[in-house]
Image (cartoon, rainbow, N blue to C red; front, side, top):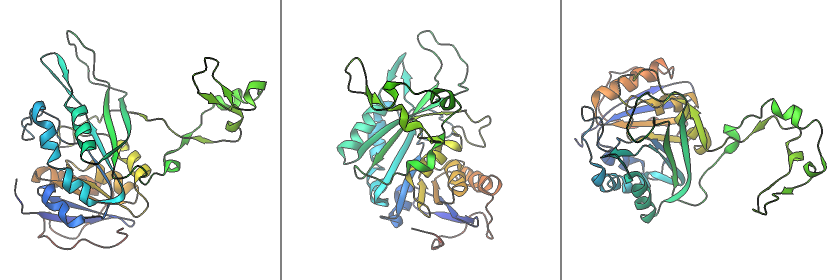
Length: 302
């Protein structure tokens, strides 16, 4: 990897996205305390040798910790880090480098706010002697404080048709909090659903795999980073994907009118990201593909 960076910026009427080719551990130094959300899917351990410098699962924790300081320094005190990642089967057994990585980050001062699951509605087919198809991946929400920026109202979803029939006739147990009969401590008050049109989603996100790889071997659906951008980045905030790949996080950020920085050390991925930002994010630019390093625009920057 090189410390030299090349960059270009594209704009929509409401936001900008800058693509930086270079090592994010160097590039992030100029963004100290400026970033609201880092959302990324880092290279998975010991995978896709033709596209990344492979990291063995046994070495993954130490490798990822080399990004801890620049990530932590770049985030605002209310900022968040979302890591989409999947563990690996080694000699027929699940290697737990993912769990060990999250534990190691917490030992460095990160707060593990929640674990989300990306449920893949169309997992890849296959057959294995001791396991089934991989139908999900982790999305870990970490932050610098126990109370990061969090706007659940921006990710509400329709409550569903079931509510009309369920609330037509409320029984005695539905008019106040009804505690579980097994004394588990859980309870509910059905009457609080009356008049509601939306409900908070769960921490299981059901999204389909991308049908084509868009010039990159590990593209997640735009709706995955879009969900976390709406939830964890304020309006006019700044999103960073330090392993930007083909630019999915940038497309999502522009669609949500958030400013974005994409970083990747692969020039082909940077070129593909700029192409997708124009095609899918409806962005424009008036410069050559990669231009010498220059100050970032300030429109809407937080």
